Image (cartoon, rainbow, N blue to C red):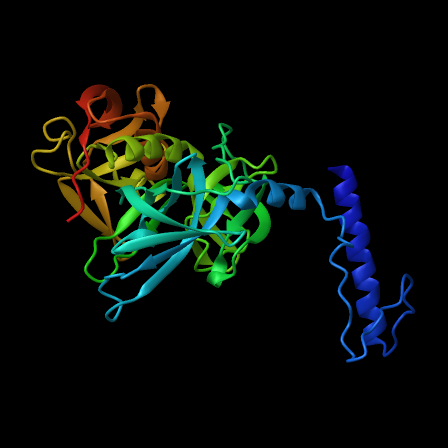
Length: 376
């Protein structure tokens, strides 16, 4: 790793020198073999004389045969006009299945995959999950060089190097490099016309460049293991991926049954910030306050919503509801932590001990999780 890093420094230093020389109106003499030209004036390309590459090249070569372009035909979505064609990326998860995003294949009639060597394979949709934005398709053919990519068992950390592999803008076999820039994110996606909004829990944030077409492709570490399934680009230098931990839970169920059951409480929550803490006489700004409880939900009769609301600096602040501090001994500092805990570590039917602050006193209640309803 040190050799690679120092090599990059030498390369950047050399590039900087060249730029300065060009800016000064001169070009430094070049060493090495002169370029030969054919009679028509075009340069000869020696494809046998390959550059050394780097550690990133090794990872790319190890995973690229297992990454496919996804072409979706007959897309029927409210924001498309008539027949349309969608596009994304996918990767092999076992010998006969590939993983992509639910939003890549949603509304499509036929899905086709193309490997980097040019081979095409027809597919059948096996299962989709709206709430994690994951989908599985069956693969009828895979090249000999293509093998399943492993989901990492390590939890990502900020600063970890990652590579996004896929087909941005239809440019097949592309890779970009960056670092993990955030973990435990909750990615809220606005509703599309005719569809409900959704928030994805346990999302990995990274800064490798991604564009339309990257969705569904793998975000890998330098061992070639999948850190997450690329979901979206959120803006300049920000991308998001469904975590390997959530993918590991959802995908086997999609392969086996075609669907995945998410745990469900039936509450509206808000993170306790200093304003919420002050208006509710809390000792510290930590935890989540229950704003509302859905009638007939698992939390109905167990947790209490906020009966009152005050306005502070023009913003509504819930007052009087239960404040969740921990679940089964795991601290819950904010909404993102609660969502990640339930989604990755608990299932419908599990009973939880929920530690709360109610009427100024710390207590505990038992709550049995239900199954999250299908989106309408």
